[in-house]
Length: 434
RNA sequence: UCCUCGGUAGCUCAAUGGUAGAGCAUUCGGCUGUUAACCGAAGGGUUCCAGGUUCGAGUCCUGGCCGAGGAGCCA
Image (cartoon, rainbow, N blue to C red; front, side, top):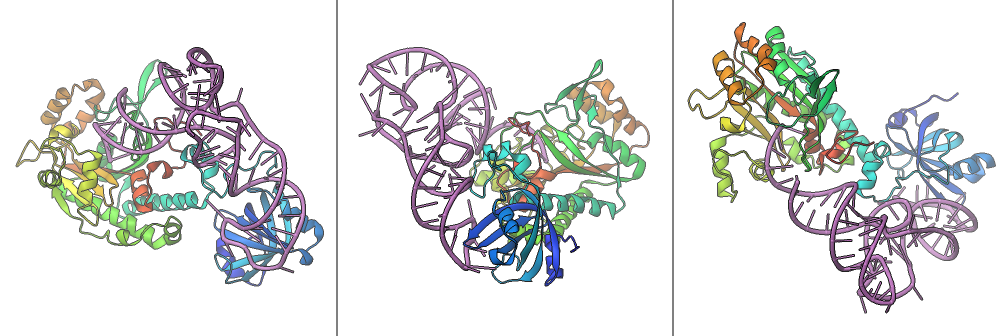
């Protein structure tokens, strides 16, 4: 029996007989020649079937194969200049596992399709080369985040998905029945991170977050993934350095390990290669000045719109850290700047090329009285925050952290138009299936 | 939630108010090196739904449904 080989490894088997397990990607025919293209999740290889060289039933069986039929195909690996990937398979035998029926053919043909059709068939669309490349880059980004933090002494502490109240009070939450009670799907692990960090010193959580806002843009999902590191005794500058280093590490890892995927996506490498520290730092004050000079309607005290973020990031060739926003546009738990108390010790990182905010974070309020005041000002339900106040009663220390939205990072690194392609099964305002 | 655009063959799209079409896909035929192969032929329609105007509606009007792009909000 010939060995079962993954397509990505066929170069090691040149001249040998191998079996490949996969799906029919396409079939071309030219007289007494058949060219079945087989994919197996690791690559695509072109098979060559010469009518005179195989038994008639083998030729007939391959000829009637339909797109995405599952199969095992056996043949000899041969280097060939004409083949994409450099190798092709001289087929001698085929075993059909399931033949896609003629009266119900595979819906996604190797031609152009509209986004609605593709999203309705997302479960099949994932098989395409482009989507497989995105899944690979996403995996690498997630792994890079975890490797970076794990190697620096962070402990992963999982935070709950069901929560009793809003983390930030402002955004809309998904409400669910929780036996006789109401619960909400988390929008951030932030508050629980603050409890965990007092236990382990450096922590992060990595999980899904949910926002029930009716956002309808290329940057929004209702369910998205976020990595949130938190460090005890860290100040704003420390968290800015951490965000910068993490982003640079992630980009570097993708460049190192996922070149083929970036090529499939036709992603320009140059802009990614520039993403090395230090990243430019920009105060909110200066950012507003730049925006006003470029014709934005922004006034001091307001938050940036998507267009503002794009204008700002276009001034730089790498991610830009914007710090010290007015407290009024940021969450209640931000520490005020001791020099200018109307500002929060916070930072947003804007990705280059108009991809917008990928990181948001800052220094948390460590003072009990001030935090109490903020909770009251924001009319947050105090009982739900008693445990959070405990963190300021029992050995409160300065601490800082941030959240990085995985989908936006994937969209940026892959050069995608829309975050809907960055996650296997996107959840959006008008999209709950498949 | 608001603004804009769209819904016609399996897919992507055309069609001055006057016989509903093309490319691709599918089936059949041809080709011994094809690269989203190519060449020839065939089959394929509740024009999103419900009303209305008209001799006549895919086209015009009203309402609804579904989707896309953007805004606000956010990662």
